[in-house]
Image 1: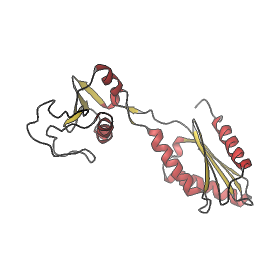
Image 2: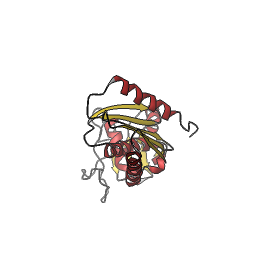
Image 3: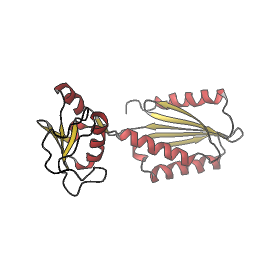
Image 4: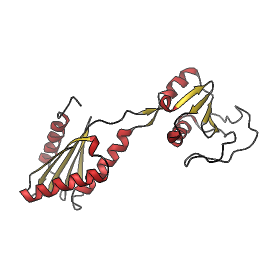
Length: 219
């Protein structure tokens, strides 16, 4: 991760550079950031922090963590079971479970009625039910199943962006509560100040964001 701080005096720039490195290390994002650039204008209490995100893992889809068995899905990666079930129930509704095994992971509901036959748990639009801890039954059309398999269960970029925004919040001065975010395809830029932000500074932040977007475009 390359860090560049400018706009302040030599001591201030060096201090912020060290702070940026420490915080990015502590929150575990240094390996996912190509470049971090910070601009400080103490006279006008203006701070611009721009991050260029590097390589991030691909989104995890339903097809990546399940195996289809007729009208059932067997979860092949237990780590994603809670997120997968929450996603399916939110989209297709939750039918009654069929005797979920003990030891269910946190986030997956237990305690179901005994003797529920396959298909008995359907109520109106509720077309997905949990058969066992790692099995999900469904009543969907074939084209709906194809769509289901492409649903995103987990996107590493979302989690990384959340961590980066948390890191930026730790780096920026506590009093700089007036914020103007600038989002780009591969990064995030935050303009912060203690005072109302002038249009010229918004333009500067957007220019920095676009310049950062052009850094290492081949990554």
